[in-house]
Image (tube, rainbow, N blue to C red):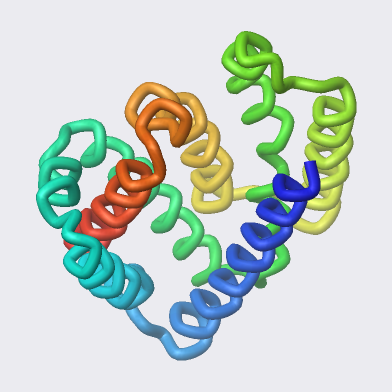
Length: 193
């Protein structure tokens, strides 16, 4: 439980940091969206490829990179990335954060059947997701009109949560090296897109 909470905290802080970097690059400095996305993925892709080379896992990386599942997953992640970038071009960072968090309940509901099957769903998670979604939606509706650019972000996040279980490997089934190869291959595709 503590590890999961720590991982969630690190993930949230990393996402918030990327939002600030993206907002600075796209909104303040006027860097084109595709260039900002490329720059955000280039260094992690290079580091990941070098790491696989050092671990003698390049073969697994290339097989994973060539998989249609990796390609579809990378497209979904890229769609979310572009949606974030478009929101950050026109709106403050906090608006993007509230838009993303407004999807907590829909994503929870999409993943609920799998969570129940694995025995990892809980009432407190459902309540927290519901409250978070209500608070975020209330804030968004109170603070301004929602346009298509803003609505694309929650839509792509929910779509990603719906499709990802069918195209991404789980660490339990595939092991850490396969999961790492999948993550690096996804970043590689994102760099190309």
